[in-house]
Figure (cartoon, rainbow, N blue to C red):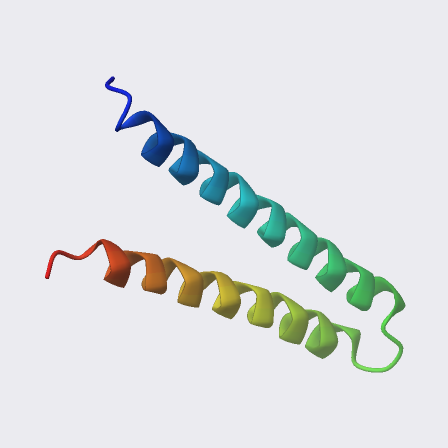
Length: 70
């Protein structure tokens, strides 16, 4: 691996870990809203989990568009 390839690999790894951490955090928040959400806990948990997944999906799509050759 050359020196020019190493930062890109580190950046990709960091991004993946960050996305995984955001996914775990969002699911943890969804679990909290399910357990302590008051009325309609399933709906509240689904909204939190859905927003987290939509955010990560948009982020992945933006990275895919950025990598696409022009």
